[in-house]
Image (spheres, rainbow, N blue to C red):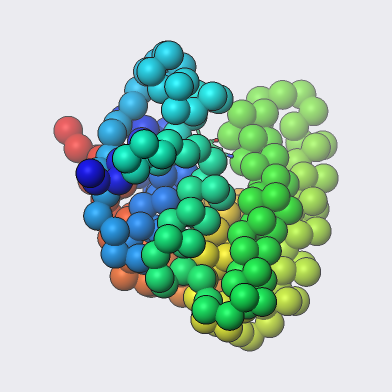
Length: 213
Ligand SMILES: N[C@@H](CCC(=O)N[C@@H](CS)C(=O)NCC(=O)O)C(=O)O
């Protein structure tokens, strides 16, 4: 039975690849696993059938036989552990790659999400102008050390890993703010991620969904 993931019927970003199904598609493309996609509307996501898969009524989910998962961190880790290509062979290197996955979603992503909320959903609030620089600085508080750690390396821990896949996916969400331009090595890191054939296939697949008539 094929792996099935869920994705937005219409992503609010119109196909920019920022919806989180893209990172799951990317992981599956990296390891060469075919998959099917079940598209869900915002209403369907909150109905019992989808809530049985995802208690918070969100996308993406992942189904493989009698296993159903939610949370992109867990899904990408599951894919990486089952198939070669996303985690190094050595136990310590593997643990470090997984650490970067957690760092991406637990340490770097939260202030980025706060910034996205501030820019998109709070821009009309009377306090928005005063708050935005604070939120931007919280993002810099994560990007400064990340940039310092990456230095001029291609990837965070030697070869490309699931840690990079998650970190690039998270950083893509900050690009529209322009903050990434302050970090040429992170901008180049992002470009390297986007240049991977597996990422291109994942991006094209979600774009096709979101630009269909
Ligand atoms: N921490 C979750 C976040 C999932 C999430 O926020 N999904 C968004 C799409 S990218 C969603 O379904 N939003 C609609 C909603 O929350 O109603 C993950 O990494 O999977």
